[in-house]
Length: 63
Length: 412
Ligand SMILES: Cc1cc2nc3c(=O)[nH]c(=O)nc-3n(C[C@H](O)[C@H](O)[C@H](O)COP(=O)(O)OP(=O)(O)OC[C@H]3O[C@@H](n4cnc5c(N)ncnc54)[C@H](O)[C@@H]3O)c2cc1C
Ligand code: SF4
Image (tube, rainbow over the protein chains, first blue to last red):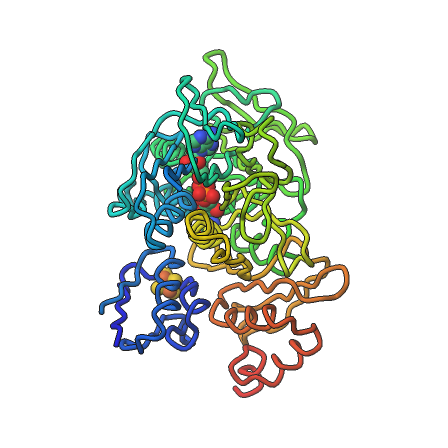
């Protein structure tokens, strides 16, 4: 399992991470980001893409 | 492959370096940058840095573990593809086996009268932003030439500092190219925040006083706008001059193939604001983008392609995305708005404070979706564009989708 951390003090709801991994990240009706905190290992490439496209460098992966 | 040389030490170059290392490249990696700074990210320059809510150190791009041989503060001045050498402005030459070109864009300057006056600024680099931020003490009068994204963001940031701001553009609405609905909304927003809009009119000259400081901006109708500061925000020019005579094709940027290899070269790759490459959404025509995400993703692909075996190179064909923050509003786009000939509002929230515009090209094919405070809908549009959905199918699906603003309006 990969743990996904998002620093909500940095996140500006640009949603670039949602493009990278739509079923992990989602912008809610209130425009606040929601995400799955634990994701299967076989999704690593998409998660790394999400880390790379976040303009605020707000996403961190663990494991 | 040794050494890998990257020219341009900004976002695309930094991501290329990281990707080359991630792909297993362990050789020498040289990064040549014209600016004295380590790579930093530009979007905050017109937003938080200008508004004074963040400092320069928050803009650094993390590249610490990439083992880079830095050559900062001196631009590359020439490329010799036969000798496989990059020349530096100081006369030194640096040999390469693989090369990544990531020299981005620079601000277009005002070449008319008054461009050299004290108080006339451009905004592209960190030093520009900190300089303008320092000059923007409360109550000063700032005239911005150009109401594109950069000019609009700077207007919002300068208002938050209490400056008196005038936005001037020859176009009838701000953010030219995003369509009338968004342009009108943007104009209303700036008006509501106290920005004076001078639209549909050109600037003929910038005037100064005897000491060489800016005093006023003269419009085509003879009006003079008093100014303590002028920001010239009239677009960006790709930094390709150093490649003149190298044999590479340089219009509308360094021309690449789908794998981001520079056409007419071997082992030379290109990425970011300076690169032009054939895009599927543009029916294979060349596009050159000036978007953060494009530079980040393209940099990663170019850096990887530069060091892997030719058979392992991947094509770059992401659907582009872009954002702009002004006041507390968020503007977001996916696709290629510049190719759209027709823009229509596809869905609107009940209060009209959120909406999505769909853009179709000259053949009626959807090529872009643009959101005003509606970014959460764009992943859906991006998938539609990626899948080649036609206009009717998209509009029908919006109508039926309970998650769309239109659907929500019906439900509520
Ligand atoms: C103020 C501002 C705000 C922005 N806001 C947004 C936004 O909100 N959203 C968005 O999507 N995009 C935004 N952008 C655009 C985004 O920042 C760019 O797309 C991105 O910076 C492009 O990265 P790049 O590495 O290709 O080029 P650049 O960032 O332009 O970097 C190119 C680097 O190469 C160097 N260089 C040039 N010539 C030479 C040479 N001959 N030798 C060596 N080095 C050279 C330059 O000095 C520069 O450091 C903004 C841009 C600016 C300026
Ligand atoms: S890309 Fe980054 S800033 Fe944007 S929504 Fe995702 S985590 Fe937040």
